[in-house]
Image 1: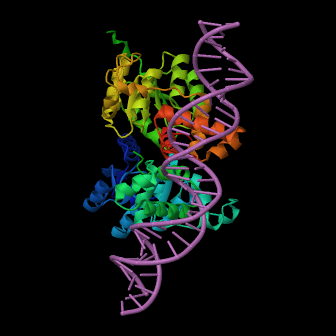
Image 2: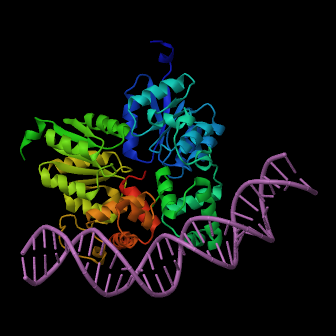
Image 3: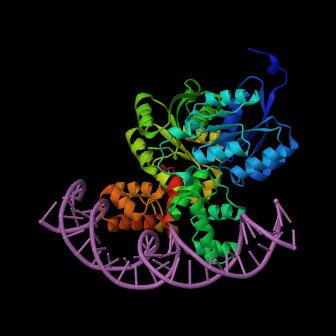
Length: 224
Length: 224
DNA sequence: TTCCAAATACGGCATCTGTCGTATGTCTTC
DNA sequence: GAAGACATACGACAGATGCCGTATTTGGAA
């Protein structure tokens, strides 16, 4: 074992909206050599605050947090504090999301149902300046040609950037609101709300409110 | 009270589909006095196996597991092994679900975003033969000691048991299928599929496919 | 300043959905 | 064998949705 990383402990920020999960992760990380958790956050706002206040090396980020508009949040942070390595930790294994997270600046992508050992492997890889992908999502990137998905261009096509408004609409759809309710909530015409929804479905290659809802909930958008 | 609980450690089964979360919970519990985790399970089948094989005192059950048809699973287990105390651990805070879980035989109901201290409090309460409700869901139950007597108007919605077919339909709705697609999948008439869906919404007091989908996904039904 | 993407808004049309009925066959259970 | 729950099936009607257009305003980038 090389002793160079024995000097200064690696410092972590843990961002997850479930306190119990945070606690568990904290114990996991603290039980490793030379690792210490210096901050935690349960929502996007608190996270930004902690990122600014502490000088952590590594951010363990649950993509399913409230106030964390998914991918957008990653690019914001990695632009703001490039020094901070971001390890995404989520249940979402959609190729779209994995690609987008990496392109947004994440250094690693772990899934919650993966082998806990992967956490250590990911940390090691990231510490060395590399990247790491959970075994369960490697197929999403490594070999696109062997991916026998029928859904062609639309599905694959990379980050699928949603506009701010579209993300807002998506979150409301995920709560089960109709176009009319969304329109009322946002103070716009129902027809406009419908159009946004249409555009969303077009971009995501989905074809019903139910599919859109399932997608949004899986993405971790607030559903209540 | 007999002091025999100091001799033998309380034994746990941890059931959660996220390996990382399981690991975290295991460390949390192992760090407590006289507690030990004797088994874990990532899906319903494995859980039943472990329940039969080990003689654990306490089951920490994530309601969002695949193969765990929510509430039904709780009544099955508590009927099979009444000795085993069930602590529900989930993100779902719907009054309906809380009530249903308790009536199905759960001894405690914790939420993942609750204070980690609640885990200890719940275990203590359950060990003594009592029940425990997370602070965030206490509002859901007016009087936890009585559970068979309807009291308020809210009882119209109370723990409505879903039929097997309805749970099946619910899972398909959660995947974004339309009535017609569900009908094809199950080999029944689209009108029948619609009727099942209607009944579902009636029982759950929901009013759109999107709401139904959000509900199903939150319940942890498979969404892909 | 020009240009473009984003947000706004509207309409038509086929289809699906939500809500109300009614009805029949098959089980279990009493 | 009667009662009840469950699964099946159909119809009507209003409203919402999915999909196709078009068009105006606006704010920021080139």
